[in-house]
Image 1 (cartoon, helix red, strand yellow):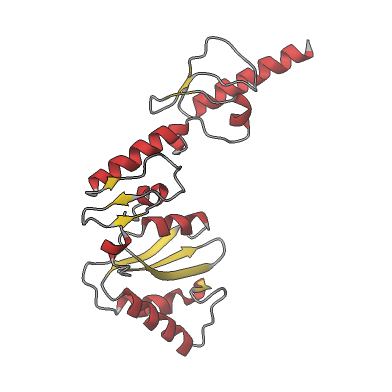
Image 2 (cartoon, helix red, strand yellow):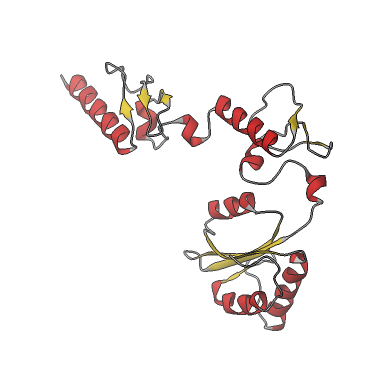
Length: 225
């Protein structure tokens, strides 16, 4: 009787969690916490989550979570084509493994699919390794700021910083001399007697005013966001 009650409770928790995530259980009967159940997620994808995994915080849908290899490969190939390239890697190696690609200019390159998905681009030669974006991000809970340089839109770099808690983008400036701005900002902090709390570009958030004084006085070509 106790096992039956436990099973009923587990099923109720599973169904409630699926509804909470915007999904619908389409499995006709309860199969137990350690077996996958057919579910339709909020985006309409057919998926088969394990009830036990949902209780541990694992997401409902692999496609929506970006963990479905078929969907990830399709998205990677589509993005490469969109950028004018061709995937020449004969098989899918996974989102975090470099794949051989020929870019629109004919360069052989090896981008990682997860990087391409986050805006890194496919060809390092075409980007010329140009540092053309300066940014300032803040981690309010840690009372720290980080500034630095990146290429293009910087989505991959910002994603990594968000993961580390630097979720507030204070400045994101596209300009050809981002490296020079970074150097000027470091010099201003040194002259002001402000020391990094980690590495060379992590500072206490109290230095934000000084950092922005330098950044906002810098000639900008494409604007500030």
